[in-house]
Each structure stands twice: as C-alpha cells, then as structure tokens.
Image (cartoon, rainbow over all chains, first blue to last red; front, side, top):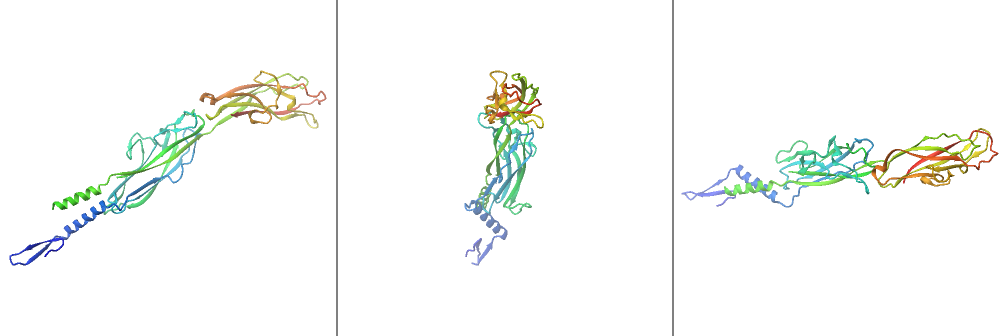
Length: 191
Length: 173
C-alpha cells in the first residue's frame, strides 16, 4: 500500500505501517514546488515603466541661475506572483544627461550638462548610479516588496511620482542669443 | 533528500532574477532672448531755417546681442513728426524739407525717402555685419548721420520756432 507523500514498511507480522512525513516537511516541499513553478513560469511578466508625463517648461536664460522648473517623473511597476521580482524588488531611479545643450544652425556655443541642476546640485554627479556614470540618483534601492513581508506603503503593484527642481546655472555669460536644446534621460532599475 | 536540495537550489536560482531597467527621455529647452537697443547720444537739434544746407551731426549709440541666424544690424533714422510752429502757425517743415547724409559721406537725400530698417520712410545709416559671435554681441556702437534743412523751405514761412521728432532705429536683419 502506498500513500502519497509517505513511505511504507513491512513488518514481520505482515502488517503495513504507513509513516507519513512530518507536515512541515511536506509543506516545505509544496512551497518549494510552487516557488519553482512560479519562478519558471513564463506567464507572469514583470513590468516597469518610467516617464515624464509633462514636458519641462522652457527656461529663460535671463540670469546665470535660472528660475527653477519642476520635472515630474512617474514610475510604475508590477511584479505579479511568479514574475522575476515578486520575491524581492529594490527600485532605483536616476536622471542624467550625456550631451550638452546645443543651439541652432552654426551656433557653436553649448550649455554643458554640468550646468543643469537637479534640486540645486549638478545633474552630473561624478559617481555611478543606476549603473550609469554621472547619473543623479532620485531614488536608491527602495524596497518595494518582500516575500511574506511587505514594507509599509509599498506593494508588488504600484507607482510613485517624484518631482525634481530643475534649473540651469553657471552657463557662459557671453552665450549667444539662441534656443538651446538637450535631453534628460530617465532610468528606473530593479534589482 | 538530495532531490529536495536540487529543488531548493533551482528555486533560489530561479528567484534570483537579474536586474532590469527601463528608460525614457524628456527634452530640456532654454532660450536666451535677443537684445537690441539704440539711443541718440548727441544732436544739437537747433537749425536756422534761414540758413538751409548747414548740417549738424546726430550720433546714435547701439548695443545688441542677436541670434547666430542674423546677418546684420541696421541703423536708420527718420522724421516721424514734421516740424510745426507754435499755436496759430500752420506752416510745417515736413520730411521733404529735411535731409540726411549717412555716416557723413555721400549725397544728402530726403530723410524719409528710404525704407531702411523695415520702415516705410527711413534712411539707412549703416548695416553692421553680424557674421561672427563677436559681431553679434556688440556694445556702445556709435554711428553718425548728418542732418540738414533743405533749401526748399518756402521763404514765406512764418517766423517761429519749429519742433519735430526724429526717430532712430536699430533692426536685426
């Protein structure tokens, strides 16, 4: 006679005694099985998005340190059960500029990325954040979820909005009159 | 027992997901506005109607900071308000009776005969080239124009003091 989850032993009297494994052990196996199945499942996809829903207002270069304009960054995530990060997810968000702001036509003047400030500090940090050299850290390793223990205010499915005060400071005083355009890169990483 | 550990290791490996990232971009735009100014820095502004053809020099002072797409800055002058006498005097010295000579060279022409600086009646004094950064950013640039009354003012004009307005222009081209 066989019993699922147990083993059998024959006695001298021909009586079969079934030894069931302890419940905790069976539960552990079950959990491991579920975890494995979930982890290997291709159905649950983790999603992570980052965007700037509204365009940054245009800066007027009327003073060496311009007025501050707000940049709102929206980050959304969904780490459903069985997806790559449902067990644990640490979110980091960064902004960075790889190139200076450039003018039009034959204008060779530029506004260096170092002149762009985030909350009063240069966007060019000199350090590596979010895996990007010189990126400015907005959020660093924020714990979103843990198996069996959800940090307060966070879930496996959620979003956050971060507002950055952007200004331009220290650009050349004799900069030519022109419109200068650059790109701020946004990056969200999960580990 | 070994199989349990294999399962456990598989699970841990499967759950140790690699980090991943998402990116986006947003533009940042800044504008340095053009600036342009002009003033009359010197002009005696008193003529003897009985002595036409006696020029006096008007000096303008200009400053500008214009876009790289500009090719130059034009300086112009016009008589925007004819010279009129005092109360009861209907005689008027208009633009056909006031002459200008840009930068003190060349012939005198009626001050309102041209279309400089995009104005319908203005004499072009000069155009400053702006093909380098230094030339696009200039301060206190002086230009002169000689102004005189023409000899076509009727001798029958009443004896009086005649007052009008000369306007100077700076225009980025």
